[in-house]
Length: 286
Length: 327
Image 1 (cartoon, rainbow over the protein chains, first blue to last red):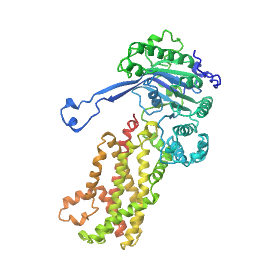
Image 2: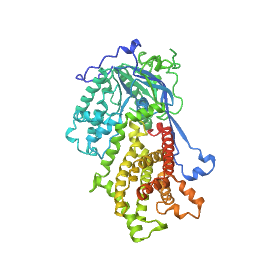
Image 3: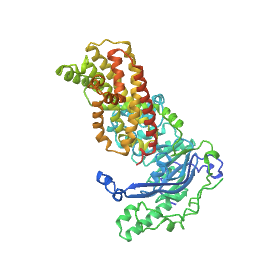
Image 4: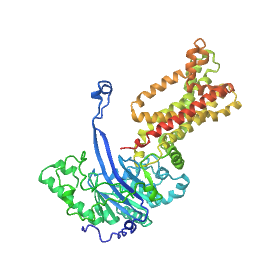
């Protein structure tokens, strides 16, 4: 549908056959999931408010439905891209699958402990890259003995061996992203959730990470990728979920879904232009 | 196989607040006629209990059993050790004395109290012989609980980012903080012993009681720290008044004055002051390190406090588990 993909990009793995015959065990089951954030609009809670009458004690909340009644089943061997405008609920969906955000209603099941690779990392700026590998790995539940065996491999695959002794705060954002990615994928997780964290790296890192993701998927892992770069998703994934204002509006072949997504975004942009409404244009996303 | 998802998804749209504001833009419906039927998400066939149909699946985002939680904590033991190691390395990285500060801190503390109360004021108060030894044991023992509670109050706020990005049993955080505190306390006890010997006390076999005393006080502190951690999470002002509460607790815990001798004339006040669990811990420490005796009844009371507080604090902390990492 859309010819964005570069010719040299690696061929996408075929859609896993398991998905169609229904006999295989899924890796992630999301059943009628809704997540509603209760955001306190008036955040002041000073003494006067607490003490004076019940009327002023009532705080104003605004409910934001980040994810609305989303259901899908993902299988081993699937690389699932998640697209949608800013605030469409992509990150919330991933955080819920990771177990960081409890569902407001609905259920989530997984066959293994999902590993979330986010933009904000668990790493500590004041200690060396070497020590941070231990920190990141043990934070995922690995033992120190395991990390002792792995630390050199991880630093090497991140291309940071010569910077191992430098404190992390001296690393560039791309170097941090490399380190993060290397730690998260060192265990070959069955379920890997990637939230926008591949965007910061350079071309070499992009190629390496795509290759590693391909390996995980071929080794019957399940990878979810949230990204604004639709082209990257088309290149890597064999299935795409499209979220719009928290709802799952399309689920299927990457090129077709991404094409439809782009078409809607174009329409919205035009509508925003004709109404001259700059605010809508921004909040509606590109 | 009961199908749980209800009705076509296309129709159940736009209830509640729209996160992007009130859009007057083409909605998905406007597009969907052009959207291939294949792309419209089908209601997946999800059984009522997927874990029974598909073995190996487990539920995400719900609180598991206590047993499972303890098992998880055990598998995160590497993290529990790495966190304080890194913290200690980071903390004194830019200082000249570096790791030596773990030794210097209690030494300075003991020295200041020794100079002020032992030399300048130079009196034995309330009939206490060797007042500086009396003081040093009290100060160092109390200091351990004080630092534990203060780090408990910080733990959730300062590890917010970590909890937002990784799911792990959150109790690992107060536990690792305690591990860090217990290490510096063990060093402090060594310093305390040196000071005691300088003031003329000979080591006795009861100094071996340091081991059970440290275990008891650590459990006690862990319980308190976990309680303070969650309490501070809900009521941030705690960090402001905690230092004052600790100061008052310091004064009533018999660190500076011998409660036993001072309140002979007031048995009711004495009973209340002596019920204070920190006083009990300080009391058994002084017995063991200064006088070479053991009051097993006091040890039992301290152990009961430690057990009650650690179990209670742990359960209280775990009840808030799912909230700590929310954005």
